[in-house]
Length: 209
Image 1: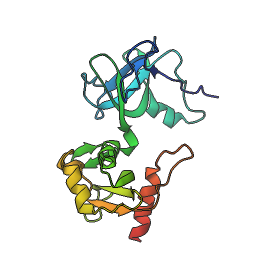
Image 2 (image 1 turned 120 degrees about the vertical axis):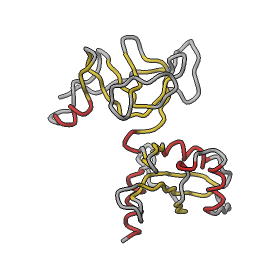
Image 3 (image 1 turned 180 degrees about the vertical axis):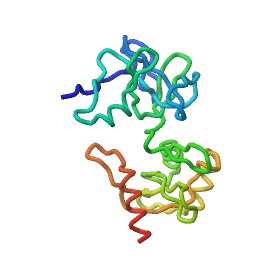
Image 4 (image 1 turned 30 degrees about the vertical axis):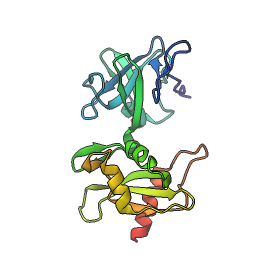
């Protein structure tokens, strides 16, 4: 059986705990942010890319899944690197921050859009209790994606799609703003409370049939 992946970062017990940061790499853990385009170009401080790690306690691979192992663990620069699938950035002091999951990233008008970033902005609206954002197939432009938000309102609150778009315009670039909204009673979630974006996309496709 393959070894399981283990923790690679932590905020220091006797140092600064930075808001929204996963902390600093553990000793003997090499962590880098690499380009989403080629998976090898090391990005400078502050830029967003994929988090990769190399460490002595890294898993060997997925049990009887050679293709998945080859996609996740790659050898270069004399080391074995685990491609985490996390989109992240690193600050000037070496603290790492998770931006989103690579599989959830949307491509809107040629720009990378991170649904978690959009969700955080929408959550700042006082009428919004919960929200899930995901990329869906564009209804009019074949092969392209569109951004959609599924919104759960606070009890007794009302808000229109137009109001939420205006709220987003104050904080997001034009291509990051969802133009499609559904107001629902609850978000589909895992047992630990994580929003299931795949189920939201499934709801959208069922509505189209």
